[in-house]
Image (cartoon, rainbow, N blue to C red; front, side, top):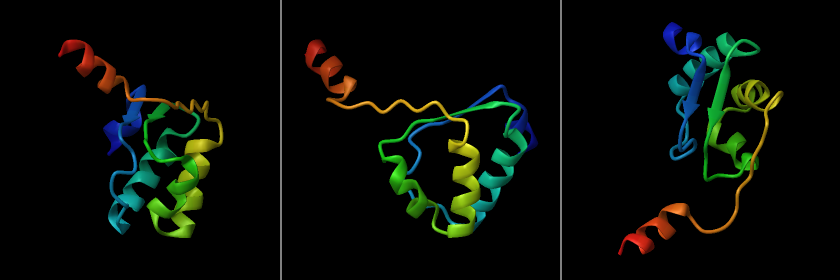
Length: 92
């Protein structure tokens, strides 16, 4: 866990595919707390940010985790068809 706190860029790809259990919530909060204000974290998700609170499960943890993720974030919300679909169609 300490090594995750030290990498320059931590990427959480496909965030939100499964709800977090108590252990995952706790560890994620610890990692984000160690990184906050010192290192960058990139999150990709197909879920809107408004649904992340329910995904985390526990309101206290959700507030703490989202505060660390969203407070100084640069958000890019994309829409439209998946780029994978257009790549597959062009290759066929």
